[in-house]
Length: 548
Image 1 (cartoon, rainbow, N blue to C red):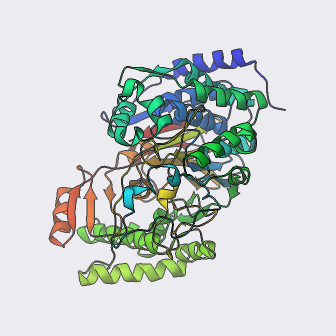
Image 2: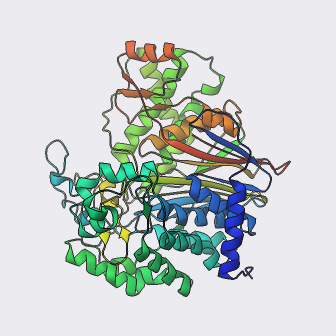
Image 3: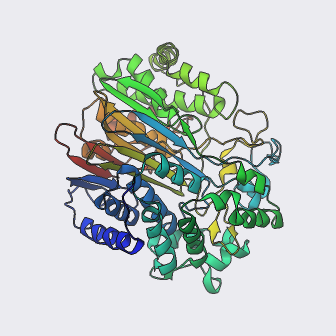
């Protein structure tokens, strides 16, 4: 039986633990990096949310309790990045003692009425008025609450009200708007003004919320309180709340119905995995983004990349491998029959060897693999990693898509909705084309690394299409170089989306940047995804956390 605390006691304990966590020791890795060492577990990601996750650990919760508590608070505190109306996410969870690793998929599902040709792209693939990104057609069934409840029920041990109450209290009490929230509201003000619910919530007196304002969402607090009373999110999908959501879609020309909401379930799924140098890397399956960095790991393993001397050729193999994986991602992947078999093939020794041969030929000939790439906006995502004193680990990512998702809000419920339908390729006939009850591809990559059958590293990122690339860079540092979590997160990163545009982080070696420019790539300085990671030492029980 799960231990019971009164709601007041639970909140009191959680608050005191969070305050104590503010004074955890820090290591100096520059203004961009957080690093900390903990004795009894760690949570890292959005800072305010992570503190409440630490409070859950202090109250006897495990990594799942901490991650879900933190995710719910992030959904209130960072409404531009995620929310209870967010389109969804995924989680990878590892049991410390048994070493078993599983994944939860709570990606959005398209409404049954969504057709493959609904967005009618022009010859350049652009959708008129961007209706796949903004407005009520851009959103499917919100998966976030179903996924977080499923994670708690499957792996957590604290009472439901202990996990959900901090978010409800924060929404009702309010909080001070930070620069990120304010900047996103300012940037998206034109779109937010087009929707009455969003304008009322996010543009008080007709202007975007500002840094330093106190922001409250009492309507959302009532939704969360209703869940706490029932100890379930069932009404969000099959009760009164679901009916109000469906009515809003019908009124505003959206397609999600009460039947679509009732049919949604978070799914427990088998992770994808690749082993190399004594480490086994597991991540959420297609349509999450983790297949891309895992495919790159498998190809680099077949190339013997870890034994090659540091050189421009070694860096070139790395870049071409990542470009090849992106080409496969953008051309082949989607929610269609046979996708599990394709993923298995791409990660198999035979599949990796075929790609490795193409990469090696490209490098030796001096001609990059032919591939086109298209860039997308990046934003609107939160990642949290958690570990407890028993070595249980959770990597949890959730998102709206881009800032405030579809920029529409359900009146009376305070639910801003994610734009999951924008993650489809609008071209009919593509594997990732829109379709009834399909799940779109996304870039979230929650990942766990195990050694000797025990989980030792949990990580993931926020930053759209930059996530798979940054995740690969951190994994290569940890697995090939044997770097600690602090060192791996601090290592320089590179970004590509499959084309000839290569973005290097500023601290990438200048001579290698010059080499790629001379080889015909379009070289620039790039932003990176923010990776949040925790590590666990099974010998000592020591926990560390780092983010950058």
